[in-house]
Image 1: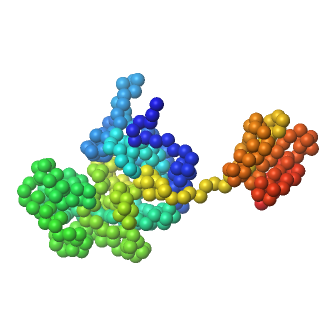
Image 2 (image 1 turned 90 degrees about the vertical axis):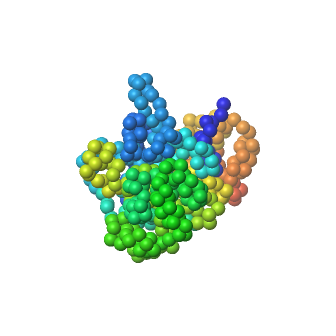
Image 3 (image 1 turned 90 degrees about the horizontal axis):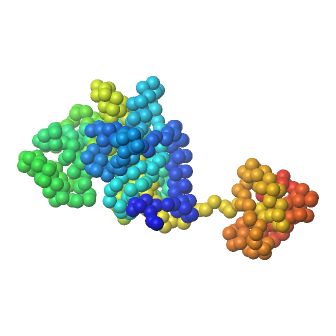
Length: 424
């Protein structure tokens, strides 16, 4: 018996860290007024394989299945397409609408550190805001998340529309823009030679290859340099970059957010701004999160390509974050209180435990099957401060015997008195 490759069970210290990260994310999502959502794991295959969804590369990793009724289904590979489905199915929804979701997704891809086949995604999305405000607010959110997790990160960002304008000016045919962008996105992983080789294998024209070579060999050009070189001032994509760039600077995020003209992310549905979060030290190379603007998906899913639902989102990768946090000490929850039956009295013990729990006190009910000395030794080893003993004499008085393991003293108390002492 073993786990399927790329899947894990979480408990103990690791689960405590995971819950801490989720608590930070959930708290910040809600402080930014995102509404919780829970979308379906199972979806119609037609939705997940739509040409408006994830693209060829991600579809190769999708888990497909057939139910007993012969329906073709798939497990969700991200939280974005199921979210778009919810918006499409609820046309009366009031915009802007902000949602967050923390849930498992599934991809039958290669397994490595920070990349699994069953993993948790933590997403926040905004529908109904077309300008750079939504992107800037999500970048603020990301900055605060990693500040609270004490992880130094950098957010690399770009705009697909702007990158398309560069490619158009460089002579790359419009029908080849998408696969060129997705290949350029691999620059940090495979280098200039790898990018050019892949573009050559995909049949990019010699003229376009020369233009891409010149672009890549220009180093790491900034927005202004590219705008001048390719004559893009006033173009829609360039204006979007300029507006977000100015907003980033005005809210003090320019030291955290770095413009990267070759970033486009691996999914085909992004239409404008894209961003990706990385470990600032460069030691951990996988992405810690990312997202972008996808204004076209929802309209296309409802068969109205003439309607745009301006939408932008961000996703935090739990497994990548855990890979960075995994070796750090975690502050455990303080141990609770043990209540121990002596010589039976389990009904009275359970009733007392219920009253203590109702007062917000964490209670463990001991089985009472060990000798009292061993029970006390076990409690002390676990760092338990208070043990409550209930035997025949205590039951007759309607009280509990409270042992303070730190002060090495004990006293008889009513349940209410015990609650007051422990709570204080």
